[in-house]
Amino acid sequence: MIWPGRIAIVLAGAALLGGMMQTAPDYNSVVQPFRHHVAAGGTGEARSFRARFTGLRLADRIAFRHFSRDLVRDSDGVFLVAEIEAEARLASQRLDAVWQGASGRRYALSRRAEGIPRGLESRWFQPGLSNRAVAVFELPEDEVAGGALVLTGGFIAVFDSALYLAPPALPERQPIIRFEP
Amino acid sequence: MRHLLWIILAAVLLLANVVVAGWTEITDLRRAREWRVVQAGAAGAGLRGVHVRVDQVWAGTAPDLSERALVLVRLALRGPEPARQGWTGCDVSLRDAADRVWLPLISADSAGAVRVLSPDGEDNGRCNPVPHDAPPDGQEFLSDQIFLVPAELLKGARLRVSAWGTRPEALEFPVKPVLRDLH
Image (tube, rainbow over all chains, first blue to last red; front, side, top):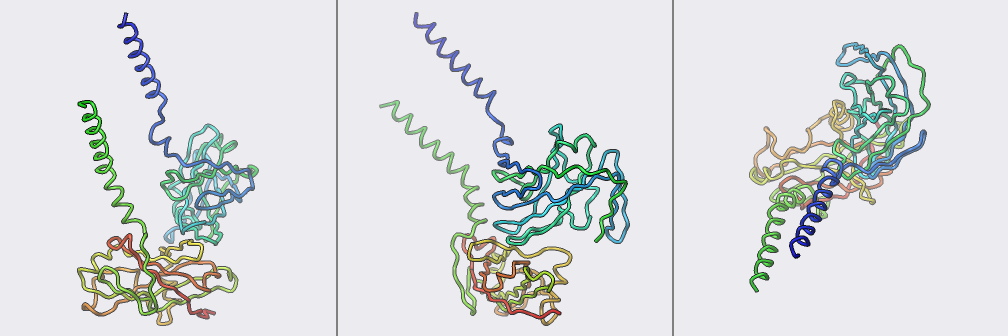
């Protein structure tokens, strides 16, 4: 009569262990930055920076000058140009941006727009000084409405904050946006 | 009694595992943080065989952006070459009373800004303790780092200097920039 009791204990232990293994979050999700959702037009306060989503533009093509060459980029989707104003709170730092589309997919900054004037990838933000920057994404048009701009401090935001900034009202799509120096 | 021995042995092994696994992280953390800061004066101070002195600090503002200022810090280092090797990765930062940190500007334009702000029009490059054209041991050599800061920091700030081989020790200097009229 002792055996059924022992077997039950072992089975219960195995079930508990299996349940824990199935539900334990993986490393990446454990160290995700803390989310702060910010309504359209509002200023978000992250641990190390504050930022505001000041403008949104959509275009079929973008044009800019880089290394003395005039460049025009077109797309099968749409170029989303996000304008932000940000300030570091603790130390000089850079910011990284991702567009989280309506489907939940995340779009990184477009490398085809590298070198645009005031581009976010080349911008440093200083404590006590507000600075403007432009983030350009290339994505399918149906990912724009219902999406959000996700800003993180630096490129490794482990245990840091992430601002989820709701966009301002969606604008009309323009044929081309030119970035002037 | 035999069970107790096993439990003690397991605890010792667990502790040893934590120490061995954590040692690299603790060493990395010590190399990254400035926990022991030595206050230095205008004459400068020595740390790990290298003498550091703030040679000059200049600042400039633009009339249409009066809330921000450019600050140029010219540092003078001297010391024997083996000691200077330990200063590789020299980090310089400005701090205010609230311990906010400003790092030097690194961009294509920063060298030009240094030349505009320095009265001699020279750019000595960023802090590099082992330059290829280092003078003989015992002679000072200069470096320039430029910062973009709020104008209120011109009333007074602290300059902190440390390196990979000095941390967690660092030197700190009070700085009061000399305002230059750039118009």
